[in-house]
Image (cartoon, rainbow, N blue to C red):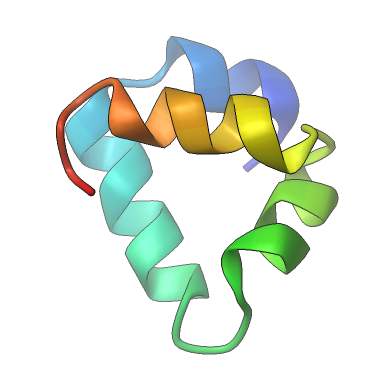
Length: 51
C-alpha cells in the first residue's frame, strides 16, 4: 500500500491491510512505510470509526 492508495481505498479495505501489517509492525512504522506522517495516517484510519 502506498500513500495514494491509502487515501482512495475504501476504509474497510484499508483497515484490513493495516491489521495485517500490525502483526509485524507498529502504527508508526506502517505510516513511515506508506509515506504518511503518523498523525494524518491515524486520522485517515479513524475516518471509518475503526479505532
